[in-house]
Image (cartoon, rainbow, N blue to C red):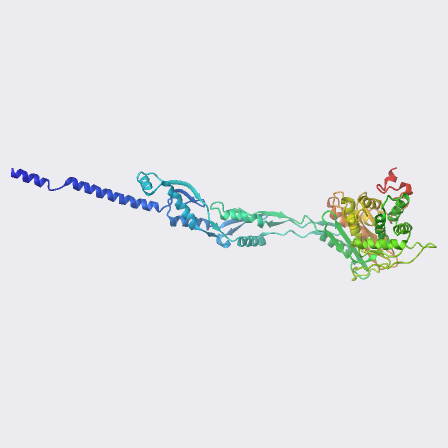
Amino acid sequence: MNASLNSRRRRAGFPVLLSLSILLTVAAIGLLIYYLVLFSRREQELPAGVTVAGINVGQLSERNAVARWERAYAEPILLIYSNDSGEHPIQLHPDQVGWRISSEPMLAGALASGQGGGGFWRRFLNFLLGIELSVSQDIPLVADYQDNALEAFLRDVAARYDDPPGSATFDLQTLTIYPGGSGYALDVGAAMPAVDSALRSASQRIVHLPVSPHGNQALGLETLRALIINYLDSRGFIYDGQGTVASVYILDLQSGDEISILGDVAYSAASTIKMPIIIEYFRQLSREPTPGESWLITNSLLCSNNSSSNLIMEIVGGNDIFTGLRRVNNSLQSISASNTYITAPFYLGVEGQELGSIQAPATSPNQTFSTEPDPFNQTTAADMGAIFSLLYDCAHYDSGLALMFPAGQITQQECRRMLEVTSANDLERLLQGGIPPDVRISHKNGWIFDTVGDAGIVYSPNGRHYAISVFLWERAEFQDYEKLWPLVEEISRAAWNFFNPDTALLQPRSNLPATAVECEGNYLPPNAEAVNLDDIKAWKRN
């Protein structure tokens, strides 16, 4: 019995179950610690599926994730400048424009995206169960650069690769102007947002720069100015000489652009002054002109009849021609044609004509050149061109001359009538001789022994109407018509070709009369009853 008890005691001396329990507990704790360590390591990685600035950084450590997106956005941008010579690749390294990424807020956003799986133990349980946390979220890029540095870089690209258009050229034989060759230009303003987009993209880092071909298609009047000067030189007429002077004024009535070649030099106005005289007549008129007055207007403007012009100045002055002269000059000053005046009646060479003059107004023409102008009757090419442009604006837009005087003194209808009458000035020489036949031109000409001038409006069929005024002077006792008149006509042709390149006159007109067509019996209405100021050529159709 004692032996049995001892045997049972020996068997009960080793607690197997207890030991096993302890071992299992220790193992469980070890496994827990092991998986906690694994989980903690996993917790230091960004969740699967998360992207930062378009770059997949899931299951990467914080350090590796930051390195990946910073490396991707440090890659250079490829800019491609394309023109006819091919494609020109240009690399832009982001640090050249001060590129800086703010990684801290981006990393914080990426880490926060992994907190959506619940608390710590819930996420640990999911880890133990093999449930992988995956998010679908893109953390936006937080970065900046220096706009001015990018603009400077693009302007440097433009300076190196842009091809400016060639200069316009002209042909002295055909008196035509040709645009320069096309060039290319980078649109820096449009390129800025395109490069910005590439800098902020991890995948689209190629930019085809906005490059546009451009040429000197919109030819400037300065090229026409050079053509006219070179043409005069080629004909041996020195435009700014001691014994010869040329003045040209041209105004584009569509754009308002103008050129002036010695346009402020004073000349003898001759019969061109009759345009301001008729303007003053209409300014004084408060009723319809009588048939007799309409005849005087037409005879004065078309035939340059001095007697008719003197009678009109008498009407303007209330039967006092000297009062009429003062009123013409006052009106010229008020419309800023301040270098134009007439101080004496036209000399008729008839017995009983009252002679005399009034004081000339103060003027300020170009004193560098002298054309020995008539002391009683002067103008400039710029003044005459401006007078016709004011008439044009008045007739077509009820502005211009209509606004230069108090309301109602000059009406749109009166301006239309003045341009209508001068459109019948068909002498077929001077300005009219440099444009195609049947093209409408409203103009007033005048010449004396050493000076020839013509000014008016050319109505281009394509709508590019222009005002032109040309005066030439050569010291001589008698005017050389065969020399000076063709010069005026070729200047007119050069202007026509500039404004009408599709219908350019490549050669001088060969059908011009030897001298001006006689007014009476050709384009002057036969009598007062035949004058229609609103349709000056109506008498020919009746």
